[in-house]
Length: 295
Image (tube, rainbow, N blue to C red; front, top):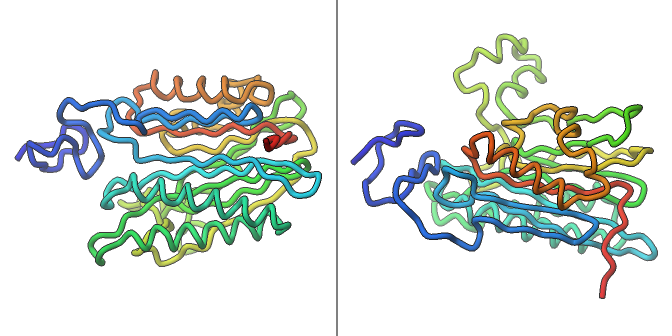
């Protein structure tokens, strides 16, 4: 046995990586999911292993949809919870199922908020089905965005985030989600003041996630019409831990609405240059959406 230099728990010498935090302990071979890019022209997405984790436990799904003459983008980002078994499988499953169900409902004419609810429910069932026992329950966070020609709808569970990045000085960039942490739960419910909640030992612990052991998979959903050009960013905490403020993110990629793939690469590189201690996943979607032309 040896001690993980990242989280200081005991691990087996031949494991290759720490099951507690994902820290790489032994040299490894490159894997297909270490770095994945999705470039649809009107949207750019990247998921990257980072510099310290043994594997990429993040995943993304990005799909264009068409309903009548309306075209838009549906995207999902999921972050596997490292202290659960097979978090990479949980994240990939949720991203695949969530994005597929989102598009199915949108192309059937359902409202984006209803489609978001249905997608989360389907992703939750798919991840729960991965469990082989009460002690073997893969888990992940979930955030999605539906960017239509005139509106933006986001839904989430956990601490993966969505941001609105304004592209002109008269508009305000903002965080569209609120982390499902014990800190926020205690302060929002009125059980404690925010200052009291911040002093709790597990203040940053998640209270919502997808998995067989999840007790609440009801997503929070927000819809709005920006009314001005900009870009929607959905990402895992591998990015926002370094750049949590919406204004800072917008300033880092001022051309996000014009060049989403370049913006995605810039944001991933910022996280890697800052240390890359976690997997990092970003999807940048310009608004208004041009959708994706189907062939």
